[in-house]
Length: 587
Image: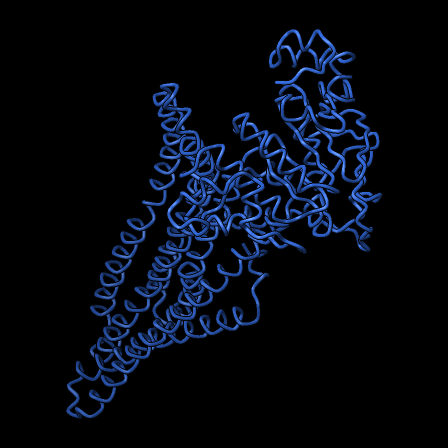
């Protein structure tokens, strides 16, 4: 928590100091009131006939009460201002840090956990700063100030007070040992519950199609029960704090009054009035001392969760991306060439190589088709080109330069990328197609025409200004893919990367789209991944991947003759006479 607070800027530190100053004022004015109370009590009991002094001290008490209230309001205002500003900056820093992550870091944290850390964890820290910090400052000030006033009175009262403090300290030790570990585990269990809930919401179609609602309910119930049991045990322990403090306060007050009555009885007439007035003031001081422990109880309830949240936030802020720009990035001339030289890749946290010694080269304006069975490494290979991951071994060259020697922004500005899953953002069609900067962008209309998307976009209410629901929920799979392709085409890049982006298209649309692309992509290097031979058969060269290795390369006809893996794929998609013939047939 304190490590996180070091990130406060100057304005937030000033607000914190102002809050602390107002807390000191609040405590000072509050503890001054018993002094006037003692004077008034002594004057009244002595039968003073001068009402001016009594009234004057009464006015002082009222002024102290108003001053304490004003200080409390000011302290609350400054603490809320400081907490809200700090949480705003914290959310911004977390978001920017996540934006800098490679896919390796995102996979390591998990999407659900990063969302929880950016929202719920920041909220816990904000609440602790807005309320808990004020009470944390108030508790020791109250305790020290009240004790300094108490120790000057009768010894038996001081002894009773210290016994009460000892009881409350023992209670705090119990909470720290029993309840706090459970409160610290709360965020871990909340993460697990969020993960199950997110799976349920994102996979609702699959769940319902497989009648798996009962299974999901059981998974949710399991995680929910773990969280509930942990919360119940933690709060059972925390629930003892307030009754214990109240009981200690009442017993302490009773002890002071009983011992005070005894002292008054034993004292002479001249001392009885002094003892009585001091007992009234002492009771007020002990009440304020107990209040400091009540404030500490509030802070203790909030601190464990905020401390865990702070640790989780710092994990995000301190984790550096494994993919960084070089100190002196190289920006090569746009040659349109791509090459893999003995590339190997292993996902972080695993030991199995997904790609093994992959080497190939693509010349400017050529089209490379990549095909292979599920899990053969096609998407992984595509992710290495824009440096979404870094190679474990070997080199990826773009325009003759190692991608690790280029800035990420420069590298990705040369690429028009359409991913395997068509990701659309909330907004209009135009917003999605024009998403991201580009040096020589095409118009939305031109990009939609090439992607064969103009027909269905024009039929939508508003055309290019039609709203796209979150995740493209109001579009079919093929429509989402065409908008994703239009977004890549609009950039008018040096390279096109299409990662199985045609899978949801019918054959007619697929063929029309590829024909339009060939006209548009003249002089543009294209890497085309597909599970369908029809999509990649016209490529200048086809690469066949099998278990992370190149099993064959060449044209469609050459691979039908020389590559067993390609022939096996072809037998599931092409007429037998074409597979067993010369390979020149056509669908």
